[in-house]
Image (cartoon, rainbow, N blue to C red; front, side, top):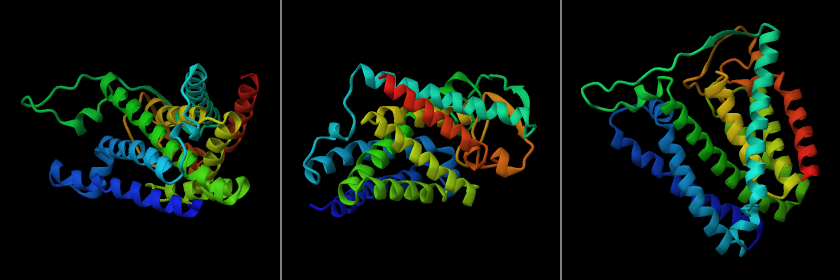
Length: 289
């Protein structure tokens, strides 16, 4: 089967499974689509994670006639090192960006938010209220969310789709197309603009670069997980347009094209040199390994 047909059939399978997201919504009561996506993102992420975990192996076996491990999922000691290195490298990126913005007066560091204890009203558990309060529980759930997001997005985008594009189009065209698609998808996020979409394209290349350096998806997964977690819940930025409970309290002083504004670091020109620095570090790491 040609690569184009494999990709098409996989997308039908994956998107078909993803419709469960909207089947679950009525079970949670009356709410708008925006309220659902903002407050119950854990449900959406879990459906996408399960969907990717089922459809990618099926498509790999029946459409590609290859093993899912051949996508770059061989688990060994090096895989764990790649994940941890990527996770903390992204933490370094978010911390460096935060420091630059503070030094240039683009954000105001107001200190740390105070951890609170959630007290259920009349014995009922309110998930939305629980996730609006900084606690070990809410930060833990956000970390789990970002682990699942990093896993399923890398499995689908840098795993199945990109590698099938390479089979059909060659490396260079596949890289360009994969990055552009990634940017277009994120252009639908809240508060997205042309600049943020272009920078997301660069982030897509950085994730592909991690795969190309190691022939494995683990480094890219670790970086994806770490970036989402550190930029949002830890350093207090919007995460690709989404706002959440944070450890650090800060105020954006703008302008948005430098501070990132309501989209987050991916909407700032200042993140671009940080990305190139991270790719240089990734190259050094891969050579040592």
